[in-house]
Image (cartoon, rainbow, N blue to C red; front, side):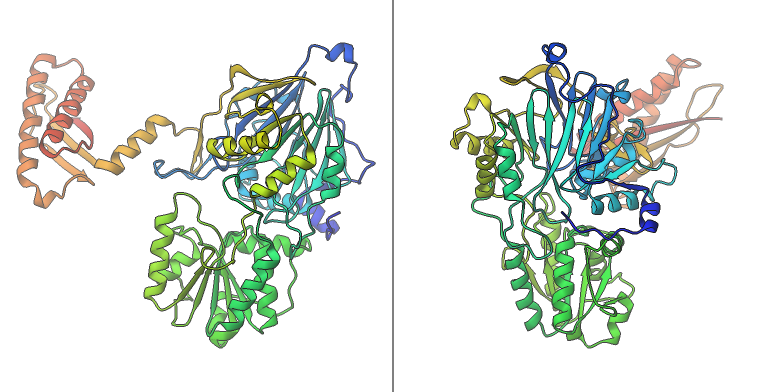
Length: 595
């Protein structure tokens, strides 16, 4: 059982209900678990992934039996490079419209944003059903809710590894696995068709530094129950060997801090509580103060400390502006920005935009994270700048300063061998990762016909003896969040933004006589991201002449009719004209003002 620091004020502040292990059961359906077989004979278990099966992130899966639905995770996905302006992407829940009353509960496996980030947006739409998760995850979720003051409070029940939750046709129990954040839940989902094991994000770490090892005995006992299906994390399916233990990471970090001549700056994920604890512990060993910077990191440290998951001596933690009060070799800094994010702390330091910190000679900068695909160039540029400013850089390809949170091939084999499922469903990862994971299962003896490699929006129907992907297609397209807008930015808007980012914008302002329909004066032209106005006088004059020609011709024929039609002609013809001249086609925006 994970130890928790529980106080009345914390419970009141987070609106969390603490579940009594084993005894307290929550029933929100008139159906009892394992209903009469006569009634359920023709029913099937439906498993519907709404996200997480064709990307890393946006994890959300539905389990449906008769009129009962449970949900596992509600995560976000960070935007791709061709999505300018988008903050993040969340799952599409159109399938659940009209079924809100059937949702018996939501289970959250752990506190990473790719598993909790969509909660503030989706829970109100789904009727705010009961939510079940571990104590640290609950604290992170409730803190995140404070950013959405107009959203109703959540009904969260905190569970532990002895809890049993009955929800209609489903009974859910929990088992402990390792990840790179504490309080990770694996799920044992009992259904009328059989037991389904959902690993969540996991790895096996036999010597973790801030956690207990995965409960292999419990996992093996679950595997002895004729498991119907194993749904297993595929993110590390292309990585051979075993996961690196956090104990090895701590030894490497200890060596670096013991030899460092100056300040040590550690950039990592804000939710990597285990790494934060390691740096604090090692810094205390060498009499270093630890400054923390980055809003999300400070928030997570506050939550983890209050709940007892993070421990440090009084006086160890200082503010960034206090670093100057100590010798360089007596200071460590933990900050965000390991992925080269433009507004994160490390990037602001490198760009000399930070109010209190600049890079000094003899600084050692540790990137304690792997590079998220798509960020390689940005991270490399960041490393280059650090070296130019006199720092030394250490990253995971040089030394063991980071261990991923996902099982590698040998761990994946171990999970399959422990569970011994009839059917195997790889989850969490790009399609090729799922396919590689399925190959691993097949090499361990699971028949190819029993490995189900699904996509987002597929409906998997299972009985005690069968599993198929139906022809049904559930809506699973991207729902994009941009500022306060949720879902109002679609493919058309993204295409417009892509066009503007590639070839710029070309605005033509035309003033016309409302009586004659003729242009008054010369059109005004504004170019943004297409041409440099002062250096393109000839092209601009030719464009103005072309615009006058188009408008006067169309206005004489169409006067007092349709100015929208004339603007469309200007847009199309000037767009083609500019392409012929430059081989670039900007977004052309004609504006007509009648006077």
